[in-house]
Image 1 (cartoon, rainbow, N blue to C red):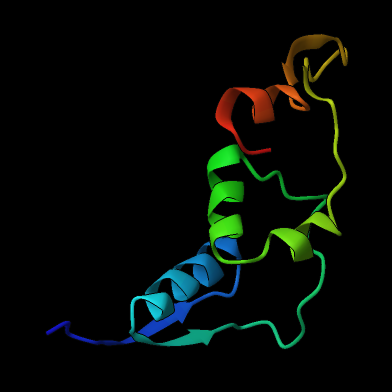
Image 2 (cartoon, rainbow, N blue to C red; image 1 turned 180 degrees about the horizontal axis):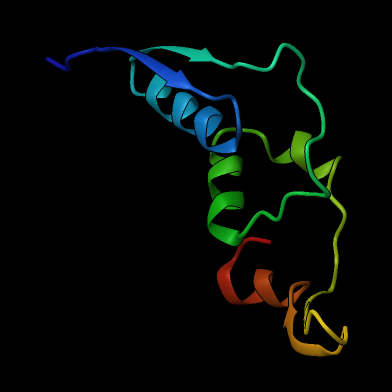
Length: 102
């Protein structure tokens, strides 16, 4: 017999929501607490690596998330004082080809 727990997750960010989905899918009763009274954009964007997109797909969220995605070809790391590119990281289609997920 599998034991079920009552679990409280503090924070409705990506980590908190991801953990709550995974725990609920395993049969636990999950309550998510969030201090913010209204959910809205906080930063410039969220980068989702291949391992995370694999998990989102397993949660059945691929179609919903894909409607919101901007597909950059590269991430450019720049030197702060000059703005010179010091390290481009290829993203699309490289990540999909290498890891099987975007």
